[in-house]
Length: 192
Image: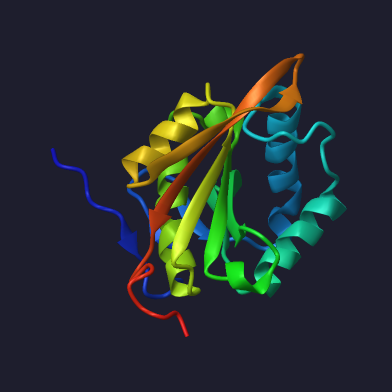
């Protein structure tokens, strides 16, 4: 039996996947779950180089900053439970970078292997392009982070390079993998 494809709901503008979590814009009420997911990655993973987990107030502030820039912050939800989140933020704060954004994707440990990272990143790219982003960048913590590197490659990101031993976490030097994806017209036309 063939599976049904993902569909965009005209009533709520969410992406719905058959028997999979929905991808939707985040809300203030998602902050506790977003914070818990991210705290796990800070304490147990090398995808982020943060050492101390941020508080709910910190995460709420970060989300508000992203949304104030007109950029997307999404969550994956199933049966009322947030299982992952993704957002895009300007690559650098200077105005010339306003058409280049960096993606961030985190999935709850219990939801790994469900394809949520791929679904979140796919929708994030769509919404980032709609917000005017021309280049989506991945700055992936740890060159051993095969899952994140693989998800980005599967969605058309290409390798830019590796910055060797730029982070120190869990008693070892960690690399950063740089990847990029052109959105829309990219650099073929003026963005303004």
